[in-house]
Structures are given as C-alpha cells and as structure tokens.
Length: 126
Image (cartoon, rainbow, N blue to C red; front, side, top):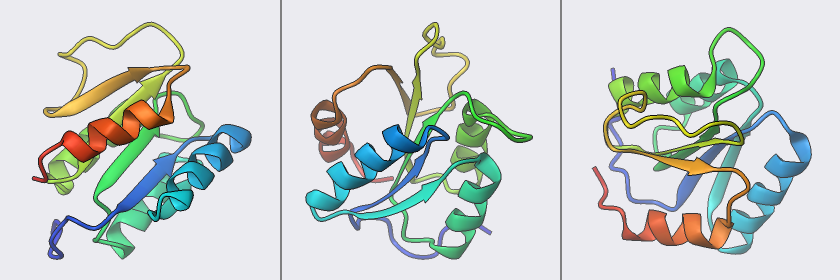
C-alpha cells in the first residue's frame, strides 16, 4: 500500500527503547513545533506508520527488543514508505553504507539533535 498523503509536514517517528533518550528527543522536536510519534519497538513503529501516513521522518535506533531491529525496520520503511527520510542511530560500530537502505543516514551515538534537525531541514522530500 504505501503512503497516500504527501509528505512535507513536520512529523517524526522516534523509535528508541531507552525511555530517557526517547523523551529527550520527543521534547526537542515538540519544542520546535514538530508532531512526534514514539515507539519502543519496530512492531509499534510499523503500526504507527500504517495509521499515520503523514509521518515524514523516521529516526530509529539499531538495537531494540522485539523481532525486528532498527536496521530491518529502516529497510521495511524504505520499501513500504519510500519518500520517508530515514535516520539510523547506534552507539556501536558504524554501519556500512551497504547495510543501510537507500537514502538513509547513519548517525553515531551520542549525537547532537540540532545537527540532526539541520540534516532533516536540508533533505529533499521524496
């Protein structure tokens, strides 16, 4: 099925199982006028993407509980929701460009949310 609503709104899905880190990211984006959805696991993220097809950006951690890690989630998002901006974060060894889906950005932890926001703002939609 894919997205039927044009992407362009300031809407982000944050997928992070560490609650304090997730709450900090939510607060950062909400303070800047973004609509924020949150998930602790890939399965929750997929359900949110299916329900809210206006989500423009997905920022996902690689390591999380559940049947799918963040890298698999990123590949799923790229296939099912192609225009979505993807940011994959990890505190472990950097991922190779070959491991990432097309047009995804790897961000090592710790990272500066201001830098992430600038990258989002510079990214073409679709």
